[in-house]
Length: 320
Image (cartoon, rainbow, N blue to C red; front, side, top):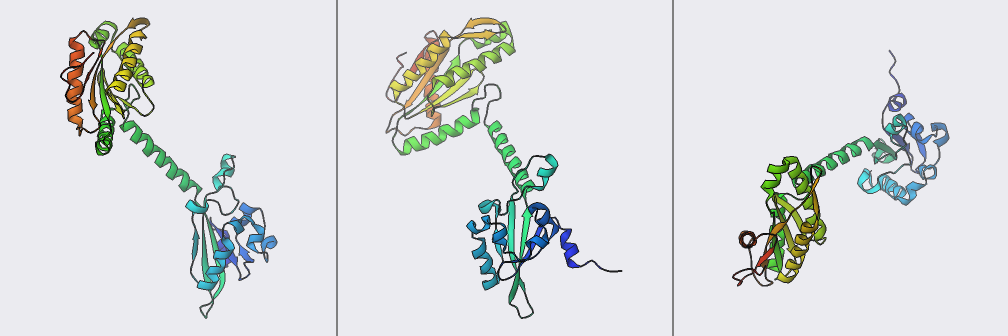
């Protein structure tokens, strides 16, 4: 039984194989290279590879190939740096009839003679497009899962866990840099009556609309989220008591003026808001801010709801 020669074996590989001499001329390339380049071996043989693929010159291919001859060490062209060394399309492109540039890893390896000198260089081209696509899908899935883990399903705002993390981060920076900030706790007035009268689906719709009003009323760098139930939190970086009240009054008025949809009926609702302020040189904790904001919210409820109450260090009561 006759064994196939090495050229036949190389022609069956699903990677590109090229053998170059010291002038970087093509001595051999396999069927994979012919299929992807559209150039037969007979047409390529004896031509410098950088004359066939002129884009290689800009990618330091010639310099690195000569280093392999000189030093006898392999050289790698990674996808991360070079992406597409050769102007080929991914193998799957032809099946999907949508041509897509091939993502590649290219290796230059020395072929040594009996005396240990580098006589030729073996160039191997790997099509890693499918692997890159798979990796990117995994990363996107991971990003989506992370986003879901910090997002409230109903309102699409940040959830309690994310809010507490961001509040801790903001407090750390504001305490360290002696900057003022504020925390607002917003509670929808008489929410239980909405659920009892119109049903929980109507209540969910109301909360969704309320979330949009609060979010649209804040600055781009404010942190808005749902703390739980009908309670929302707004973290106001670099904000003193006056500016915090201005923002919260804007939210209160917009809610008061808005007609909410309750199963086809338009209803008007209000919110009560408690605000805790951290002065510039104060060292505050998250628990302290929450405690003060809750006390201010309780005062707003006691005073008839639909109002903003603030509290700052040294301030006995709010001035809603």
